[in-house]
Image (cartoon, rainbow, N blue to C red; front, side):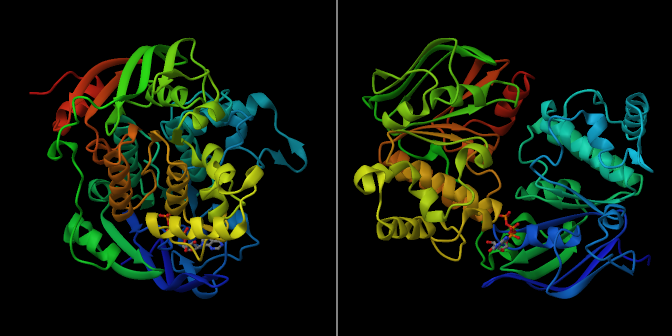
Length: 500
Ligand SMILES: Nc1ncnc2c1ncn2[C@@H]1O[C@H](COP(=O)(O)OP(=O)(O)OP(=O)(O)O)[C@@H](O)[C@H]1O
């Protein structure tokens, strides 16, 4: 048998008191797509940072093709072996695609190569991997899908034939996911090996041949995917038997007919959507579904004041909100989980307790000064209520795993006891079990009488909704009451019309 593409042997890693990896081994065979799964904080990103030369091990070792990994100081040698495409862009947004592809490479012997040549080389490179992206476009203007393709092409151009995809599907709609999988299969047939991280276990079965599970910093199992069912994967990740329970609006009592209207959106138009009207009542969850280009995010962002509409109104409990004013929306009782937690959701350098109490400081103490004791106890409560894995309420959010950061965002949104909660992809990056717990929280606040506007790409999330509105090209085109069939909703989202 040929040498593994990568082999990690007995790897250990600590961050202060936190054991991020304990004696973890991983073997990835040439030409396979190998899934790496585990709950939030299990150690996946830490292992990836070690496999890609971003950080060293405390114990154990890594080899590529049977040869010891290069020293961390020789980053060019790492790049020739492995690359990771992260959820967050690793491109320089202001520079063109061509410049990003050849960044730090176009100066040879002190002479920069000309723009024309750079462009030509970039086009040839993208063509050779069948990536159709204009090389002059500033990288910051690319869609997530195209940006990922450019990053894959860049990795291949350094000679790497082992690529780590870290939650690549988290921001893609279903059609883009299908295209990514098709490309992975194609690249695999030309000898590229993948390590694939995802919280969507059905994807593991769809696109991978082998799977490794980490739990609490330890290796739990490695097996061919056909030998482990989705339920067995969940059991391995949690260390418990028992599977998942999905909350479905179809099985709860219907909404009281006289439930008050909390959110009123009337003929709202703005960037990417037009003439959207909707109502959400007390105790009701209304879902917004659609492709990434449908305008669903923009509608929700306009409701909570991140964007200004060009026409129409948003009102909460009958009071019209001033356009594009987040503070006014918060004041009127709107809590939100924004689309991008890194830019809008969290202050990364601050602690869990500071982030969780950010929206309520004025209520916790005079003049916006909340005593540390009060913040600490609120922070501790958030840790237990939302199942956040952290050393304590004082730990900086930047030290938490991605899924645990997302839980802090939800804690913050609900801390102010809002009347209306706007949730955009609230379970993005959250592991299956935590997702269940977060959806239970959303269901609980609904039962308490809050109104919920829920934008999601996840059918599991949307199951919680009394009604799902489907948007296409900026307009509401369909409404599905609870109990919809997956195929009907997916067909509506993709614009294929209802399937028989
Ligand atoms: N820079 C750091 N400083 C302190 N602790 C850290 C740091 N990076 C990671 N950790 C801790 O190490 C553990 C493993 O985190 P890691 O990011 O590897 O998890 P993960 O499996 O990738 O989770 P997720 O699915 O949520 O992204 C966590 O407890 C995390 O808080």
